[in-house]
Length: 289
Length: 239
Image (cartoon, rainbow over the protein chains, first blue to last red):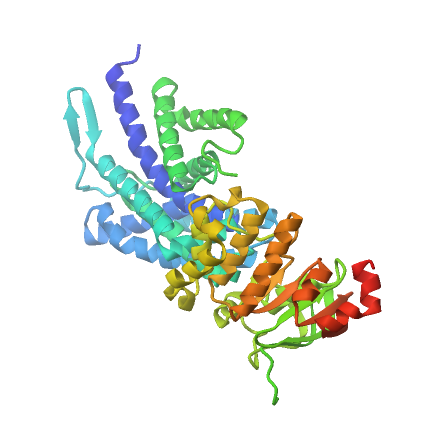
């Protein structure tokens, strides 16, 4: 029998990680909902941002979480540039071309990291929040708790922005009908650029939080990409809340997989459950159309 | 030019990519008019409206608004100048509420500042929209959806409103209501370019009209005269 304390610990870990996954997946979801483009390089931006965070943290010798102050605006600008140079030219192109371009972008980012940083993992040696809160047999890692809280707050802020601001209205209107939005006076390309930039900025925030305890390597992007796709597909186009719930489900599934099967099989468990869910709900759990 | 029209198309050739639809269209709309653009399916009426708003490929010719060429401006900039369209099939933001659809209509800077005032005007024109303010647009009936599409276009405070088949797919009684609204809008100072399949109804409320066939204007004149034209009667009015 598996120790109930271990299960509880893993479940808590799953919930906390799930919130971080939601944060990372949100950018992918916003971009997909708005532009019908799946950015297959999404996870690789988390990886590049994780290295950037690591470099800045080492230089200033501060906790990786603090570097978000620099990396989030930096990656917003990088996102704007990537949109202009790589994404805008393939808007409305054949899906195959869009896939080839964004998959290619992911490989370029991976190879850059590999060439520059080599394959070895990098982590910050002196994290500030490397302790846990013990409640009897239950231990909660403070760094993950902070990451989850910041993720959750960010999700709510973005949801608020989408529902209550003029820019959010433009995003939702353009998502709903891209053809007609310009007739309202909405500059659709500008909405696309800012949303893409925002999505990439969120990967930087996710990376800064993850590096509080995690380590990066050139292949870090793959698992973040895989998890993000599952979350977006499962969430359907259900907006921020769909992403939040799906992220939590994925986090918990991953925790259950590593508890009951094996830590190395956790992604397989997530994917099997995902296939199973799509069997019954082909439009995702929280889909709208 | 001594006599500046509000909107003027000169030798406009336009289409989609390689597919040329308009073969030299000349037309104009003056302030305060209702101008009807009629013709068979596939004549290029919708393409004409879309070209005025920069949603097609313009190969040659010029489009002037208040005397100034607008062919280089993207769609949203043309909307800022005071041109907008009720698109064919309404094009509502289906999973936004009625209220949010209307707000989106007021997106331009100028319209946004006056949005409360404009909203009151639109609710006065369409009391049903006020009742259904918080309903999801996708759940409206056909007539209500068309009212919302018109209301949303009005939220941008257009000086000229292009309407593409506003009566399409509506019950006969609602069709009459739509024509009443078009008249009312003109009386409130909105200039209108109307594309319609109900040729007789639209000529009756219009000041002037153009008849389009295969991407060309084949007939034009005061709507009353066209209504009497034997040619037109035979072709469109089935009399």
